[in-house]
Image (cartoon, rainbow, N blue to C red; front, side, top):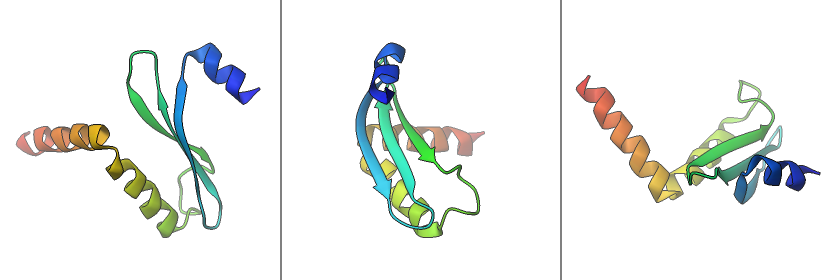
Length: 82
């Protein structure tokens, strides 16, 4: 059912991660039809209940994606200039 919904929306799931901790966090890297990548945290909402080590692990996953990291760095550079 979930895979069917992803196909209907035209979203391609590149990778899924389960970040261990309390509570368990599931994260996905998805790509839309235009080739844009997104990191999607499934469960639970990012709030104070998520342990710091889970957030650190999620940030580590994001930093390994060179394309996304390059965009984040470019945005930070522009922001500093403003």
